[in-house]
Amino acid sequence: MKYVILFLMLAFEVKAAEPTSDFLSLCKTTLQNNQKALPLCETIHQKYFLKNKTSDIAPFLPKDVGAPSSPIDDKVQFFIFNDPNYMSGIAYCYFVYRNWISPSEIGPDTLAMSASGFSILNENIKDYQKWLVASTEGKKCKSRVEKESEVTVADLEISLKGKVALIGINPYAIIHSPDVSLESVEKEMLLTVNHERIHAYHVACPSFEKWSIKEWEKLPSAKKNEYIKKYPSYTWSIPKIAGREYIGFLFESTPEKITEHVKGCKI
Image 1: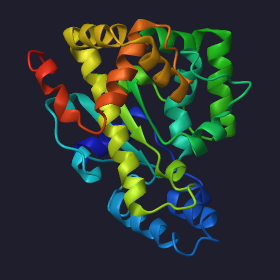
Image 2: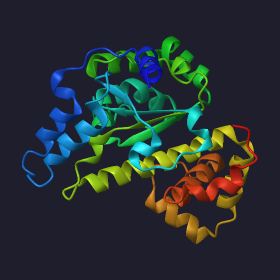
Image 3: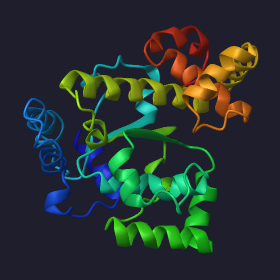
């Protein structure tokens, strides 16, 4: 565990967070009028952050959120945000680079306060880093995050070295539901880990990727439209994205069912 913490500190260049931007402070402010849910803030703080030496980003294991272990876990970096601003430091510019978000519509603060989790796969990371440091748009994005979120933008080549994916969870974004409970928060964490870990297999196992695309392509149009309408933010017209997301949503509650499709993969 000590080495994981050290890796996080080096890879993400963690610096001291503002006292009011930690999970416990933000959670208590958000839920101050919801006395039933307010104790949840302390419960999550104690379970995930109190024992960790890194105040802004903490490592966790899939079992901590009730997810089963998987052969690919050693190839994945799992972390949870105490300070949601650090989510933007890791993910915001990458999302802009991939055209997943528009910087004119979503700023670093909005992403940090609303995105409950994500994965960054070890694909095209060198191209992203070149864009970040050499292009006008990349440098502008980096400067914006560092100014507005007051965190350093991560070097993803370093962060992903030896890994196939980073999976991050942002509990602050999960607590906003009126009927929020520890069970609902941890269920969302569980589904995020299961879903994003399936995508890690997509990177590590080309045969699984091909199978996923074929499974999507053979779906009836009516069934495809159900997914497209339910999850409109994805680019379903791109076969690789469609295949990945279809299988991710299909098996996020029963991840053990992908075992037969990845058993031949070299992890």
